[in-house]
Length: 427
Image 1 (cartoon, rainbow, N blue to C red):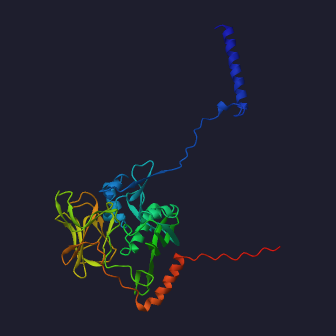
Image 2: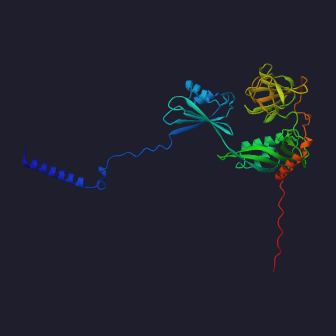
Image 3: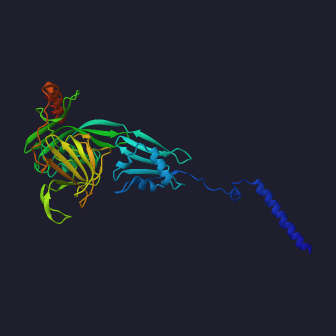
């Protein structure tokens, strides 16, 4: 091998050794390509995925939980643990929050709001498939507030214009409108008696949760001007149970033996009398009143009574409830989607108590309630006005009522403060 070739390779080797010595003495900042290769740290900001789903119409709880992967034996274990969940009385639209690990396809926690005051959470107990339920009580603070508005077309529209969302959400404003209508159930027909320009004022309780939610509580007092004539309503409750309800300024009860309507309805879709049946395509007597309402709307007893029939009936009623009242009066509630839990023949119910839910069973073209009012077996118009006066404030409670009425009136119609006199200017 030529000596020139060996000499050149020795020279290259020397340069590499020298470079290596220099590399060893240099800092990593001077030779950045010598730094070890590292990947950026993985930051986990959310280990769980949460999904909100609603119970659809004609769906069951199993359909909702199946969307979270809870099926079969796992679903059975869930039901065994969730004892506070009224599985058979869940209303369409109810929201469920399903939480799962992002690395898993099956939910590990289910949360549902049972009521404004209660929240149910059902979570997995551990590595096994067991579940544990926790019922949380949500605290609410109560504030008394006063609302006044002028009606042009309807009570709700007046409230909707006068009350902001920050004061009460839209759904709660609707509840307030229904509550006012219930107070004046037989005294004022807000669909017929009201004229543009009539004013109303209401003293109410508003509830607010620690989470910032606001909802309507109850009406305490109200004034409605009908044709420039004020009509007052004051809530009074005796501690001994001698009187409870709304009374006018003279202590006369605003309650009647029967409510005007058994539910919060959108409109009267068919009145009492003869009509052309939409399914039978024939003219026939309509022995009740049909109230169009959303599927699942609660149906309430219009008066105190005893349940005589509960179940599926022939003749077009579908699911039917019949109540017996004093003086040979019976009321019927048809086309229901379901019944209140535990309702059975022989049970006593109170006026305003929920007994069933709006549906479309039997001969029905859409969700509504068929309501009948029978006197000695004869169908009668349930919207008549002669429903009997309620019991006034007992004489021995007159002084207590007067004091309660005056206190509510002072809040309902607070007197305007008198401006202090202006001191005369001095020269």
